[in-house]
Each structure stands twice: as C-alpha cells, then as structure tokens.
Length: 337
Figure 1 (tube, rainbow, N blue to C red):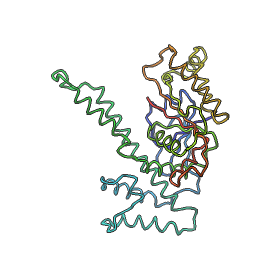
Figure 2: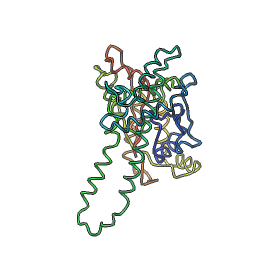
Figure 3: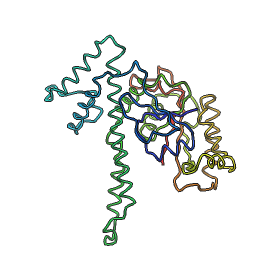
Figure 4: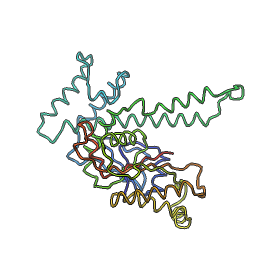
C-alpha cells in the first residue's frame, strides 16, 4: 500500500529517502502547471495530477504570476490570505483588479466549479512557494550551523550566535501559515485530489503544524471520547536510506528489532482494518522500540508520530470544523528528523 504525501508539493530529500526506506513507495500530488521538483524524480515516487476536468485554464499562469508579484508587494499581508481578501477597496494596481474580476466572472461560467478550481490551484501554487522558501532557509541554516565561523577562536562566548540560529530556525512555517491558511490549503488539496483517496489511507506530513492543527480540531470537536485508545503514538525508527534495497531487506529480516519495525509498518498502513486493536499493538511495540538497545544504523533516526482520526458525528462539528470530515478513517503520520 502506498502512502500519500500531504499536503506538500515540496520536501527535504533526506526525509523522502528515509520515508521510502521504511514505508516503501510514496504518492505525491501536484497541481496542474507546477513543475515536478527534482527531488521527486525517484522510481519509488508516483506523481499524480488532478483529473483533467479540474484544469484551471490557459490563462492561469499569467494570473499566478500577478498574484506572486502582488504577494511580494504586500509583505504586511499573509501570502495566502491575499486570495481571500483580495485588493483594497481602492486598488492601485489595475492588473490586480483585473485578476479579481476574472475570478468573479469565473463563477458565472457553465463549466464545473471553475472558480473553485482556479482558487484551489492558486492556493496550492502559493503554498508551494512558501515551502520552497522554507526549504531554502533550512538549507542555509544547516550550512551555518555546521560551518565554523572565522572569528570563533577569538570569541569567548558564541551563545548569542547559537540563539540567533535557533530563533531563525523557529520562524519556519509559523510566520507564514496560520490555522485559517491551513484550512484553505486542506480544502484546496482535497478539492483537487480527494477523489484519489479511499478509506483508511495513510497521509504523511513533515510539518508539525499540520498534525497539531488536526489534533486540536479533533480533540475540541470530540465532546465525548469515542475511544479510550491513546490517540497519538510517537517513536523513533532507524535510518535505512543509506543502504541498498538488498541490505535493507537483510537487516529487516535478520535483526529482531528490525522485525518489530516491519510489524509496526504493517500495522500503521493497515490501521483502518481494526483501528482499536492495531493502535494498541502499535503502542506496545513503540515502547519496545524505545526501550530496546537497538543496533545503531545511523546517527540520524526518523521520528514518527501516528494518529488515527476516528469519525465524529456532524452534530459535534461546527461549520468551521467540517474540514475534519475529510480526515475521518484516515491515518495521519508526522515524520521528523
């Protein structure tokens, strides 16, 4: 069973390699007219685009270019928020105003949900831009952390520099994506790709905000516990990405701890068949992994946090929480290095 990258159109290469080495093939979803990032050119990655009837139109790229220019000029406004609120009452940019008129006109079109399709593509393209900037920032911070400063030997206390790097690293998505934007991104992603998913799929994210937002929505909406099962389970798995497939298979069959990892993987990817039973089993195995003196395969392990979203009756959901319905009976997996 494939796992599905959600809702990202970008990803660190190191995370991709580790995820594939543990779970196997992965599906990545890209909107129309978005170039495939080099990192996704992997035999174990399947790229999916929206159905043909959900193309945004020939004029979309010029519209996207205008939105990007507009976003760069409006640093005081949230990048994706621009799509919701549009220009000021007295727009100074005629081209920007034309974009809004185009979007407004699209709803009158007889074609299927044309306005929504355009909006969904704009949101995911702009979200991809945000992710690209974040990856570039991560790369720069990584280089700074491991690069010895020229004046290191003459500086008695480099704590200020370390604090600065920590603060910069903490900015990340938090300065770009709030809960409202995440909801818009989720709606756009499911609008374009939701038809590809069945029940009991595994959605994988590397953004803690995605997991935390869904967990908070579910916890707040579930007025009465639907289960006494531990809702979120976290544990570390070794990095096998530097080994060939043959070596990976040998390691996973000859080492007792690795046999546990195989069992954990099988349980995660089939939680939906019997959620209560399998979550209990994963929880027990996760303790074995954390307590075991497992053979160190790499200095860098992968941290997995697994959460299954049990269904909640509509009467317990507010209008703003209805997006949760898209995630019921799905497994959300957070991966962190």
